Every structure is written in structure tokens, then in C-alpha cells.
Length: 180
Image 1 (cartoon, rainbow, N blue to C red):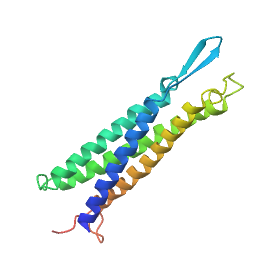
Image 2 (cartoon, rainbow, N blue to C red):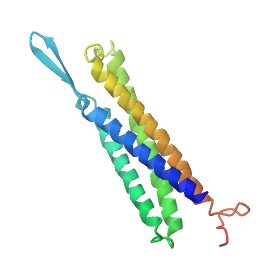
Image 3 (cartoon, one colour):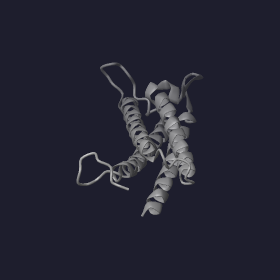
Image 4 (cartoon, rainbow, N blue to C red):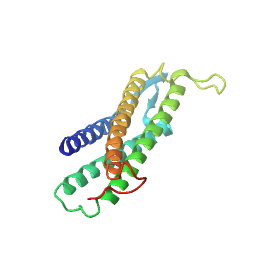
């Protein structure tokens, strides 16, 4: 059971890293240039929307965090950190929760800002950007979908971390460790 759960956590973390890197690359390398008026060119990049810029930083940081957790997992499996397993389990749970919530939050903020680019706003006299830059908007949409998939994968990793923490406590007594 332990080996299967550890292997599942490794697969989930590795999958989350791949999807996070894919999401960051799709946003960061997405540009489209169109001729707007008599030779004047307009270029759409992720720098045009601040939430997309923040999304690149957050997804990159979350991928780096999951990579560090994979490194920790490989060193802990060798028995180097058995004495401090309880504190490491709590820290991992706490950091996993932070990574999930921040990634989900920035992805949702990016969706909200991107919807303004899709629909525009007559009240603010903002034009619809996706009418002119359709490939750019489709690629950003794919990146945001990857961000939500990564958030789900990291939430599953977080449930495994929570299980690792709370299985050490007694089911009969509140916040009392199981006797070893």
C-alpha cells in the first residue's frame, strides 16, 4: 500500500510538472502579429495582460516546487530523514496546499482577464482582441486549460500528503499520535 501510494504520488507530481511546464511555455511563447492599418503592425503577447504574466511566473514556480518535492521524495526513500518524518509531512502538506491554491487562483484570474479580451467591454471602450488575434487566444485558452488540469493533479497530490499526515494520528484520540 505504501509503495503504491508513493509511486502514485511520483506519477502525479511528474504529470503535474509536465502540464505546468506546458502551460507556462504555451503562454510565454505565444505571440501573434497582425497588420492593423496601412502597414502598422500590432503584436499580441502575454505581456499585454498582467494576469498572464503572473501566471507564467506562478506555474514555473509550482513546477520547480514539484521538482524539488520529487528530489525530496527520492532522498527520503533512502532513509536519510526518518527522524523528522512528521515535521516533513506537515511541511509538505502545507506547501502542497499553497501551491494548489496559488496556481488555481492565478489561473482563474487569467481566465477572467482573458474573457475581457474575448468579449470586450463597450462601457470601457475596449475592443474584442480575439476577433483579430484568434490563434493567440486559442493558444492562451489551451494554456489555461492545462493550468486547471495541473491544479487538479496538484490537488490529488495534496490529498496524498494529507493522508500521509493524518494516518499517523490515532483514530480514537484527538491529535494523539499512534503508538509505535
